[in-house]
Length: 117
Image 1 (cartoon, rainbow, N blue to C red):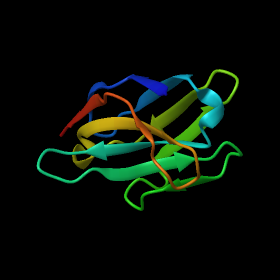
Image 2 (cartoon, one colour; image 1 turned 90 degrees about the vertical axis):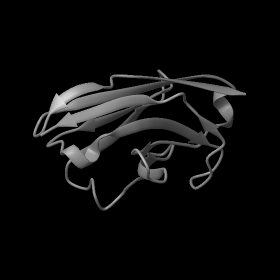
Image 3 (tube, rainbow, N blue to C red; image 1 turned 180 degrees about the horizontal axis):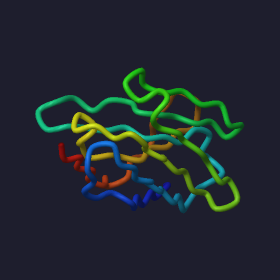
């Protein structure tokens, strides 16, 4: 099993920035890709960003140019730098990890991000 613990959520004004962190523990060797998804009230969970162990990244169109995902393999931690935040970015953000570049096998508990207008 892999455990994922997120931190860094909170309340920020539109145009502001936040950085989310997610630390992985357990069967780390089984992880290839890590990433972030989010779920806004009344909406389905959606992919935000994903990064492979080799550093290949992909983003949702809605966050391209504003969010940056990065990974510290030595610390088993993935980060999401969120800039130019908008009210529509308000959601619970979930860290995830998978054995392949496209699989999601583990989820964190989520951290809430609220962007006020």
